[in-house]
Image (cartoon, rainbow, N blue to C red; front, side, top):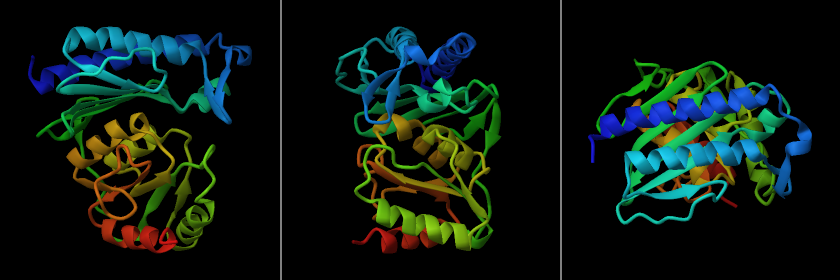
Length: 265
């Protein structure tokens, strides 16, 4: 195979191709095209077609790879490499005409993330990294912020929309952040939130109920940008464990203790 750097750059090109398709379709999109996969879980032909664009392109980049995809347009298991793809993270924003959504692609080699790409087409921003590289935004190196206290931090989260079993604990963290930080933002795309942590725009992010395709690329980019990512107990089961906190290194321990305390029950 080509080097991870070359594979990453080809992946960026494919993400932009899918993002351009999504933006073009947004001009003519109608709510009548929306399907419901489950309660508050929306999808359309745009998600599915964007996923097919990505899968077909990535199969050429890395023919031996498998795929974990949100829309299940392909069912291939790779022996060594797995692509983890969300063709349109922020579908609800997209269908309502809100300009915050993205294409999210990660590559896992065995159990290790080695590439992450997030393309936000509304602002033409491509965040990316590969194993042993810095993180980049449109060819410029990015790093997490240097803020050293939660009190001086701007944080992000996503609202649970299908699983409300942990809402009490979630809202306790939310309440703490409202009172003890510079504030909380909810953009509607977990992948964009994570990319913004990597770029130093947010100091941290937390959410539960997410899937691997929501977080894999962003988590990896944050790590390459000098940040820290974990599950709510401080462990490393954040890709498939359906819970994640991601911060700069300076506020990680402080934020982790808050999340641990509120989610202990």
